[in-house]
Length: 282
Length: 159
Ligand SMILES: Cc1cc2nc3c(=O)[nH]c(=O)nc-3n(C[C@H](O)[C@H](O)[C@H](O)COP(=O)(O)OP(=O)(O)OC[C@H]3O[C@@H](n4cnc5c(N)ncnc54)[C@H](O)[C@@H]3O)c2cc1C
Ligand code: FES
Ligand code: FES
Image 1 (cartoon, chains in turn red, blue):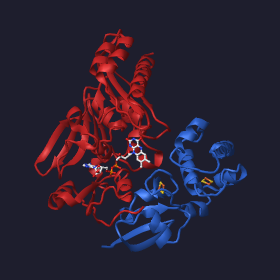
Image 2 (image 1 turned 180 degrees about the horizontal axis):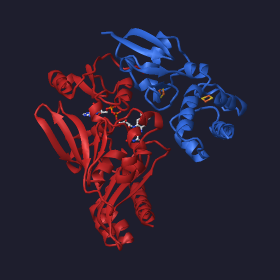
Image 3 (image 1 turned 30 degrees about the horizontal axis):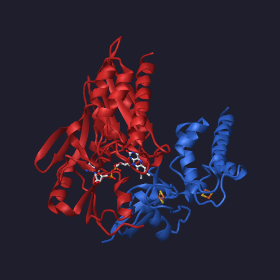
Image 4 (image 1 turned 90 degrees about the horizontal axis):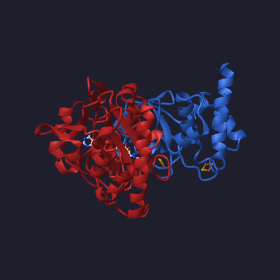
């Protein structure tokens, strides 16, 4: 199908973009990579009056490292993350996860900011941000705000972004040589959204994991932290961790999988992701 | 309202006025008559509409023509005429990697992009990198064969 008619502007600066968004309010939508918005328009699931194309704002396409932090601009494309030597060295969880996001041609256009602003409950990158305890930066008519990932994702396609606000980037702190990660996902085909997936981030001492964060996706209306399982894993007890998933998660049932099957798969993924943290240290 | 665009398509400068809602694949087919770019699903799933935009393979149905203002677009026609993928095309023919040919322009562009970033992909990698391109005829096996054979032949030629 074809999209309904819309007007299109390509502002040259963030300020102009914010200005246009505040003037046009309801009728305007931000266009970044278009890899989720264009399908929605073509399927006529949405019909905004105006697309504000921020895809060309090059100053928001960057990957920077600090002493213990990584900063990534909202308009950084999935392919940039995939090929980034800095990401591979400082935060390999993202390098692992990005290979599961859609297909190469979509990764050539889709952006980090678009993926986070969309907040698909089965998407990889929101869960990674939750596991990494990332801070999301937004700019809007009222100035700039910083929002913790755990507060940012609020439901199916729902985020803390207010009307007229633009996501500008993310900051991932607390990085260091003691960080370890695991990533596992089950989908019908490579590149599909997950049936269930898990992003694991932790610290590693010689004997155990600490600060374990398990962000499951595809199980609820948003990515969720499995806290009881994480503390059991920190105590080194995998079978207790698997059992704890039943209290942490109340997975959804749909045509792809029942709730019980998702819960079972979550346990399988927990072991896989945990084994990855062991391989990394071997 | 139509908007003016200027872009380079297969090396030639093109100027046009387009409705913002027109996607690039429709623009190439309807306005420029470049019908090698196919259209299947129009929501990003099948890959039939693949074109190169500033050197990277993208979905022609998920980019609006207005967004290509100032860009360089290469379609299967341009990439065929330049001879860049002549060997890959020959391998597709030899290995029966196409039947109806609907998916083939997209497959060729995706496969060539893979071979440019990874000169010696294993079969698993080839399948993975072509996962976004649907073929309803071949069952994929022959396509993987053709891409693998091309990778080997290129490696031989380099020696
Ligand atoms: C066939 C197919 C398969 C896919 N598979 C996956 C998958 O497995 N996993 C996955 O995670 N994704 C998948 N995607 C989606 C893809 O990753 C998108 O690139 C991503 O979700 C959105 O990024 P975008 O830059 O294209 O955003 P757009 O499509 O431009 O925008 C998406 C939404 O976010 C808003 N938005 C975008 N950027 C900003 C910003 N900076 N500030 C405020 N609002 C903004 C837009 O207004 C829109 O509502 C798939 C897409 C397709 C077509
Ligand atoms: S027509 Fe573009 S992906 Fe199917
Ligand atoms: S050859 Fe017919 S769809 Fe691939």
